[in-house]
Image (cartoon, rainbow, N blue to C red; front, top):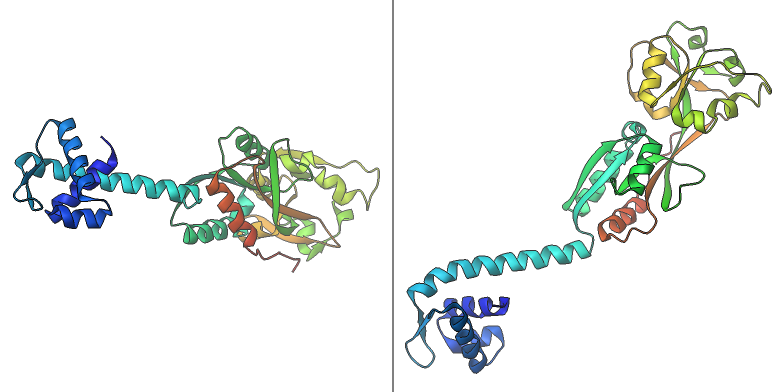
Length: 301
């Protein structure tokens, strides 16, 4: 049984006339009659009573079969529609990773809202992971894409698209002498207890920030944290000074004073990462939408 047999039967049942049904289907009456007989033979049941040469009525079996035939045609049409939409990248679920700064900066909200508005049948499943964990998850297919810290180089098989830049600021325990300043010179940090997130440690963030002002001076990194929120927790506990992106200033953590870094400071870039060879139309559509967005670059205030 083919779906055209069901379509022909449903049309005949609606018109109850071979000529009108044939016109609607754009086939000959002979073809329509032949296809109906093939369907009845396959089912082993008579579906229509021929009143005249053209006019017909449904048998009891035909009436019962009509309900199921209509449902099957509708389901087939829905499946075909979903297939076409999926091929155009209009439907499906994107498993998206993100770092906390993607929320505090508004990037995650803008990306998901904009894409959701243009793709009402596209959905997101969100997972908060740090940059390196996202890269591993994207590479292994556990994530479709990630909003991460941008790197100079990405692991083989991954591509990063830079979308946003913002400066680092200092998270200083309240009551600390440097909290009295509006901006802190990097030289002031030389002997202070410093906190580093994993990515900062890997990229030698503190060394790159302070060494130009105090070359060959060892730094006092007292703790390394899994993520920026942990850096804030350690700083609020008075254990050291952390560096977070400016958008983290929106997180009101008791016990912390946020201060600018004097001079050019250091910038953090955010990127969308995906698999280089990903041919999923939904992901390609997501990247196209993201590339068109404009994210406000946060400057020193």
